Every structure is written in C-alpha cells, then in structure tokens.
Image 1 (cartoon, rainbow, N blue to C red):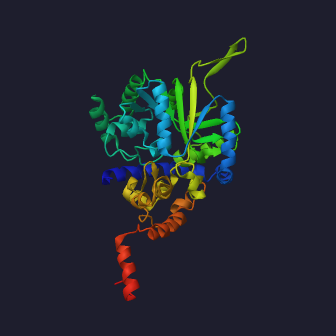
Image 2 (image 1 turned 60 degrees about the horizontal axis):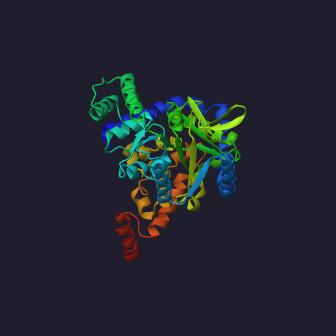
Image 3 (image 1 turned 90 degrees about the vertical axis):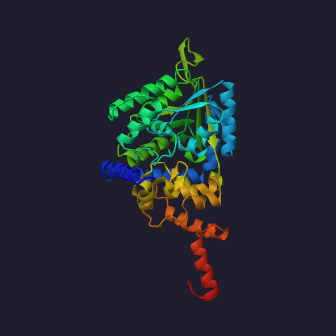
Length: 400
C-alpha cells in the first residue's frame, strides 16, 4: 500500500478506537463479551449437530440449502442458479465469504455484471486495480476524499466535487440505475440461527434490503456462522457492531427466515409478495472442518487489525483475500495451503498478542501463528535467511 493510503487508514482506525473505547468498557458490553465467547465456543465444538439442525430448520422454512465443500463447489452452485434465472446483472452486498471464493472475478469471466451495493465496496470496485479492502466493515478506509473523488469522476464520467454527500448521492444513483433489471441478489450472513433457520445480516446503508428483494436471494455463509438460536445470533452481531464501528447497534438488522409470502387472502399462503420468491443458502466448508477451532471463533469485527502494529505499518499485504491480518494468514492455510499461508505474511507477525488482547472472543492468533510457523518450516516454507542461520548452526555450531 502507498504511504498516503496507510496514513489515511491509520487515521480512520484511530476514529474507530476513540468511538468504541467508552462502549467497550461498559458493563453491558463486558457481559456481552462473556456471553458471545461462550456462544462461539459451544457452537464450534458442536458444529455438526448445529449444522444438521439448521438443515432441518431451513427445510421447514422453505429455504433451499446447499452444502459446498470447496469454493469451486460454491461457484458451481451459483452458476446453476444464475443460469436458471437468466441473470446478467447481480446486486451484491458486502461479504468476506464471497471475497473468499473470488465471486466477482469468476462472474466477470462470464460477462455477468456484479454491482456492489455497499458504498465502500462500490468505491473499491470503481477503483478497478489495487482494490482490496483494508477493514471488514470499512473496506475503503485507506482512501481520502480527494482520491475517492478522482475514482468516481473517472469511472462514472461525472464531475462531482470533493464533498462526501455529493459523492454518496452520485454513487447511489449509479448503483440504483444499474440494478433496475437485476433479478438476483447475493450476500453473506453475519450469523445463522440453527433452531429457527434464520439468517441475520447487519448493515447501515439499507443495501441488504435491496439485495433481499430481488426474485432470487443467494446467501453464502461459512459453516462457522451457525449458532444455536436467534437470541445467540443477535448477541453476536451486536458485539460485532460495537467492536467494528463503536456503535451499540447498526441502522438495520435483517432477519431472513424464508421467501416472501402472505396469507392475507382467506389465510391461503401466497409466495412472492414484495421480496424474494426463492432463497438459497449455500453453506461453505472450504477448509473450516480442518481448521484450528479458535480460528473459527471470529465474529468479523476487524478490531484485531485496527490494533495490529504490523497491519498498521504495511496494510492489507498482511492477510489473505478479505481475511485481514494474522487471523487471515492462519485461515489461508486451511482455505488454500501452506504456501499461501507463508505468502500471506506468516513471518510478518511479531507475535506481540495485541490482536488477542483486543479481540472480543480472545482468539489466540499469535499462538496459532507460532504453531503454524513450526509446521510451515517442516514442509519447507520459511524465510531463506532463517534457513541459512539454521544450516550454519547445524554445521558450524554458530549462526555465522
């Protein structure tokens, strides 16, 4: 990342820190931290049982559900659904999971226009190159208003002033115009309630509501998002909001428990009133079954990278796809392989533990990274300088 982008990113992160400090120390938040840690620990330990319960609940709610073992499986399922709906334009909401499977690149090769509805993601999409996000909930936090103005003017062939409100209105209108003929929406989910068969999604912009009103709503979520109940899911997303944005709650919280329907005429069930006529959930494994359990405790708040000294120094070079920082490096081993894990920054981490101290569920990322370095070295992925020192010690009883 450029030095100017890093500087802007650090300023954005400081704003989040100041906003969230008071809330994080409140008694209610501390109680919520304890509760969510217990929820995630229980959910990961009993993932298979909860998965089976979720499958039954989805069936009861008339939600189609597919299991994708790999990212390729997920993309194949999506391709079939888009072919069924003859889709050429798709409304997309923010989702780290869709970034994980490289959805946009895959569909671009098929000439399908994927329109980001989140403002930050849309700005990065308009940027076209060097456009990876820097934070889970603030993807464009590294771009100042001058740079964003240039991106919007160049990409949309307009002449907006460097004023936030004007930029927002211009991008919003462009997105709405592009989505007039879109009949498919696709999103992730922040949490899944196994008992109710409900999917919880949080947002401030109202864009997920737009996505969910298309004829077909596809939801791609990792199996690690499943928790026992709707109450548990709400607790999780509330804590995520506190640590991600410094607010107690987001503007919108969508709970999707089935396709659009009404029974207002003689109590006869009719589908497809205003929202989706079909909801399809794709539950993605993609290495999660083999992952270190603590890696799956993550609630996606991004507070780890806000406080990470390495991430604040180098930016999103430290991480994997949309999974940023040390936890992203750790997940890359299971999503991809040892080489990807090494190239994602396995040896960048200082093992300082600030990520764990600032993680609401206390993921021991530094310990996970340290253990992964041992495993990585065993299969030949380690800094060459370290290898030279190792050989010197072995041959000369000295590192020199």
